[in-house]
Image (cartoon, rainbow, N blue to C red; front, side):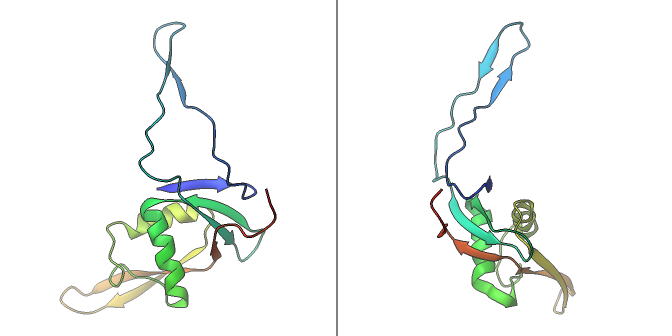
Amino acid sequence: MAGKKNAPCSGQADTTRDVSFAGATNTRNISSKRIKRHSGGTLYRITPSAGEAFCITVSGRDRWALEQLRNAGAMGCTPILNPAPRWAAYVHDLRNLGVEIETITEPHEGGFPGHHARYVLRSGVSLGWKGEAA
């Protein structure tokens, strides 16, 4: 699951609460806090091709996809060589967070010829924040 931008890479948790109002007058339902099953995610510093660096926190499959893209370098990743159920969704989530990822459409042969996507990371991505203190 994708996290959200932390500006400017403060690494501080969001303390806002989700408060929804019930149908009855003057009645509030305050949703209980979810039990944390996982850590809050991993902090990454993103350096876009244009603009200032910023930080994002990602977890789950989005984090896995970002790590696959980092490790692949200029060769990029394809769903054929790096199988995952929803590559396009992971890339979409990362793009929404500001990560630059190029999609290259390539033909493939075999029993089911067609086209597939190759995703190439175009932003600089480093683990954590190694800049000034927040």
